[in-house]
Amino acid sequence: MTNTKSKAIINANVFDGKNVIGKKTVVFSGGVITSILNDLPADIDDVIDGEGCTLLPGLIDAHVHTSVEFLKDALKFGITTELEMMGGFTSKGRESQLIGVTGAADVRSAGMGLTAPGGHPDELIPKGDGIPEFVLKEMEKMSEEEKAIFIAAHQAQKEEEESGADVTSLNGAIDFVRRQVNNGADYFKIMIEEGTVMNAPGLPLIETPVLKAAVDEAHKLGKIAIAHVLTAEAAKTAVEIGVDGLAHLFIDRPDWTQDLIESIASKGIFVTPCLVLNSSIIGNSACHVANDERVENKLNEDWKMTMCSCFNTFPEGNMEDNFNNVKDLHDAGVDILVGTDVSVPMPHLGGLAHGVSVHHEMQLLVEAGLSPIEALRSATSVTSKRFNLSDRGLIAEGMRADLLLVKGDPTKNISDSLSIMGIWKEGESYYS
Image (cartoon, rainbow, N blue to C red; front, top):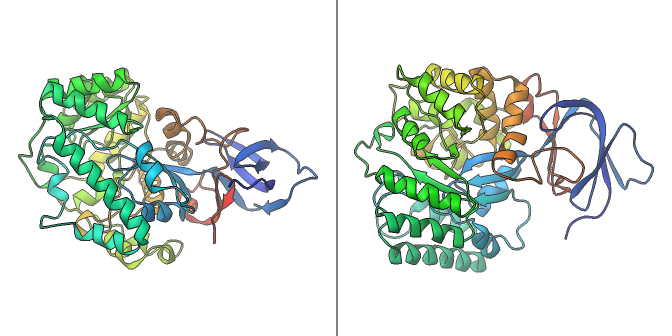
């Protein structure tokens, strides 16, 4: 039940998701922001003094693969919404798996992404009999009831995949889109990944005309379509078939990159660079982030081990190309979104962890040449706009009271976003 007590955060410098609006009193009740004032009204039940702090909208991670446990991990770092890019948290999945769950980030989902049999991300999933080890580890933390719901959801998904038409055919791909939407997918995702960057060259791909038919079908059903791409060539294909967003940044920088960037900009396509992932693919760990004193006590040993590892599948890449690609996209007017592609705690998926990697991503965006305010917009208002989440991403009257209070000023020093003093999701405090 939503808390109806009125609360006010006073004396904090407010970044409203778009701009710094100075010291304000932000009042919220019943899960929503009710007013933004210069003074404190007389009838407030609970007053929080934000002196020396900055108040931000709750942050959004625009690219995850998650679980109930991981949604809880995300909230510890002020991420109040995760956008799942492949998984079971469609509206149907949320109804079965999240009823009564508290202390977890909100979630939206693409459902299952369209990929060829044996295509990406198959190469990343440990082979062997039965349920993968990382899933078993997750299940250990569940009650018997939660396990039963989890197993039933996965079984239903498996049966649906096996009974569906061949997704590599025109009709099969269209049928696949319809099934995701019927399951309550909030948006739609396709894979364009031949595997070189993942050290698995020759992965099967769905033919371009079939992918285009799937994207067209998603649009007919009122859903935006997002493409997994990791190379400029894949991004070029995605642009040609009419996607709305790229779920990654191309890691290479061929001599025709500027033409690609211009076509992305002219078609209004957004890009979620996931620089934290590309850095890991190139061979960099995020151990320095995991060992930050503001972080380490919020991560369990599995996540610390994962942060201190990396994908390392494309060591010939370099971060300078990635930074230049992001800066050129941004300068061309392309909407840049904060996303991480975090999934499960395993060394070969290293350099990432739920929640904290959003803060790391903002740091990398600033390193690439965005201002701290632009990086913060990318984790709040820009993402909410592009994913049609009209009730969040801004501090404004009538918006969800998803709020993050941090010491210092991340609009000037982006690292201050990790100095967390308070977290509210729909007006409920989750900071301890």
